[in-house]
Image 1: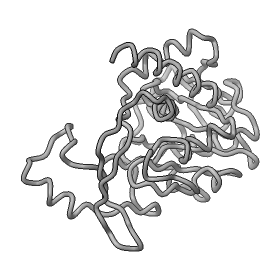
Image 2: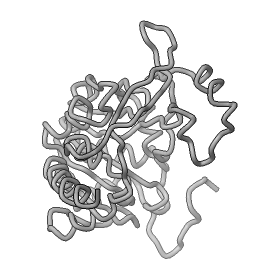
Image 3: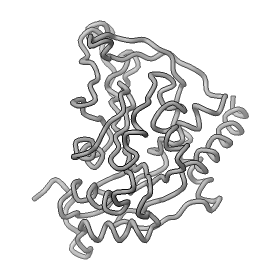
Length: 271
């Protein structure tokens, strides 16, 4: 038996073709550029597992389209900030000195799910060069979306998120909630109300491994579910099923604009 969830004998098997049809009914079209956040288990039993989902997405947008997914490496960060679990204080300098540098070709993603990790290594996929919050892309616009990714602000305009905003792409939440919607981080970075904090990571500098300290926005997803609920209520989101997964499709630019206004109003009032 595969590692997928136990088979629900009342459900239908999901295949590349059934998933593609569900994506089409949701509104994903040939030529679209779409960033995907996903859960394999939410879809139900999939013939071919994450490979089938990746193939269905690529078929749905076709050769003129582009699929993007997060490929974040959150473990490449300052160990003093780790909480799940924390590490002993006397380990901190050892970790900072020994953490392998991020390398786009080999560093695995962490916490992104099986579909995103499969996509990262899929033939033709390219990856942005950020040591903590890289993005992977496959398709016509993949190179242009991933070519620029500044160290900081890591989720601001000069990143794949900024490129997605400018090309008026789409967001697909495939069986996951708004707490996984990285587009909201671009809204934070451009809101003017989010403070800066210190950060650190291991990266390559002229081919040499270094530990680099920098400042970035204090990104906070705690209110993303509420932003999403208000976005749903605005009527700008298409909701449907992909397999067993309740999924949402929306325009990237309008979603970021909505979330930016929300953050400016609500977080400023809460401060």
